[in-house]
Length: 341
Image 1 (spheres, rainbow, N blue to C red):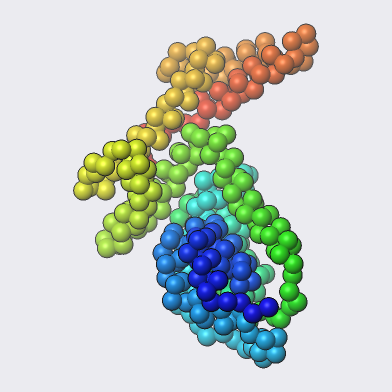
Image 2: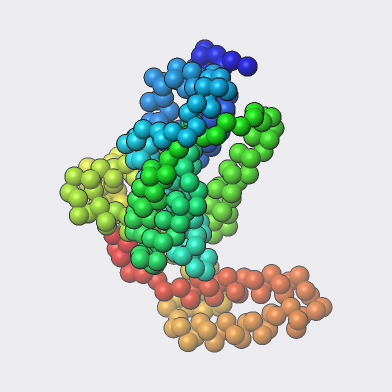
């Protein structure tokens, strides 16, 4: 069934940032990309206004026209390469925030997240790339920068170069039902947002700390580039400034440093509150030594272990989990103020 240009523009206007027009045109990879990035931060959505006629023409190509493209190499696109880099970095930052607690994260989790971000952009439209080679480049680059958040940049770069090297047109396949396509998109969306939502709602203080530390490490790399550094800071501060405007505090300093200081204080307030609650759970005064914390933890664990309290199992389990959570909070070394910058 031929796709209409007016319908496409209507869907672009109504649900463009969510990728509705791409879903209508059968561009599922592009729809998923827009769902996960809200239309490329809004900029990609606006830029598409001029590209929609070509998207509609591409969707209305006959089966024979698509088959003639198979075996050919698409022209090199600087826009696609830059987009692969940016989305790869974006996926890596999200992974750092939500999955960095995993064992061997920098060997498995980080290169996988960055590689999938690059592959998603590579599969936009009628193009794709080699899955194994792209992920292989990401996994081979990761050990060279083990344990450093800045590893996101070289991993994304190597994966993007490999994806461009192996670019090709998609093979012609039969059309799928809308329910199957929506099911696949839903699973992909949940796989991306699930860990992030869990970290944000169930471990808010640690998530905010990861955000501050990750952005600090990311910006420290750009400090070597005087023109790019301030630009990146302004871009990353836009959500924070929007939040301040919504909260009715439009007063901003012209100094980015002062804005980051406000954001850091906001993050620290969550950390301070959580540590105070942890001291209360363990019945310790603030400033207790590591030996005192460890000794008190062992004492309370023996008292409230569920095996020793079978007559009040639910209460014992609740106290036992609270004690473990408090001990984990106080066991983490607290970084001095300003170490993230």
